[in-house]
Length: 314
Image (cartoon, rainbow, N blue to C red; front, side, top):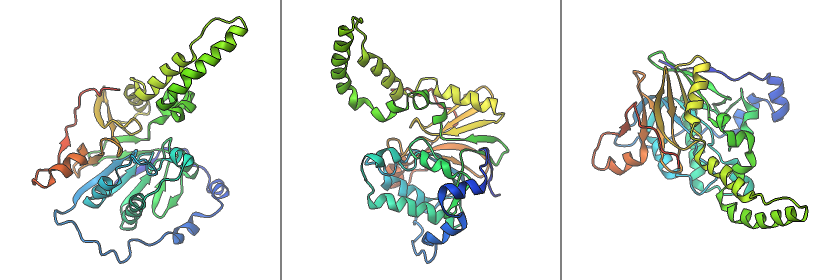
């Protein structure tokens, strides 16, 4: 049964999108190579894992930390009906500072477009690192639908809100520049603190630690706020859905908050995990790094159960 997806974003008129993009959607598709044609790639001898839905996020293409080899192996090994790209697929922040795009990252883009060409429904929900694509919500690029968020209906009838998650990150919303700053700048802040307080003394003002204030904010940014999951689950409850799927915090997780199930699909920088839905509506976390490590021993694909302990935030 085809996966039902309902866009939960406010639709922007097509004329506005065309004015922003400078071309019509119908004119873009022929520009993309038809990579599905003449595909002679052999099916893996182990067979493909048939799944109803796959959610992946936080790939961060354009960074050295992206585990493109593992992700490409995963994409070649699964056969989903619907693939959700839940934000931070491309790291626009990093690419602004310097170009890094090895051939393996091209292979990921090629594989996703090939899946779309072969009939897989691919839904792209931009995150904060690829936020430039949010202006194109409602358009389809090479068969890849771009939406702000979506409501996914599982095989057993549950409605899941799908979004990246940065909407609930106070650091991104209220101190966005700190997300660019990062911990590496803390040593510089210590030196700035000396100059800052020297100026304050000249004006007769008491000592105030700029570095301590910033360090506290950066620490909160690294921890992604301990209440992130509760806030996301509460928003899902207010939206009247049965669950929520997000990414953003690089922590694969399945938790229950009252009548709302919180799902996080993890990332492809550290954990290399995906969230998958089976034909009967069961949803599990697939740890692909463990799967690859054990595959030679003919071990069943490892999945984490529906109930997980509370995550530890660093």
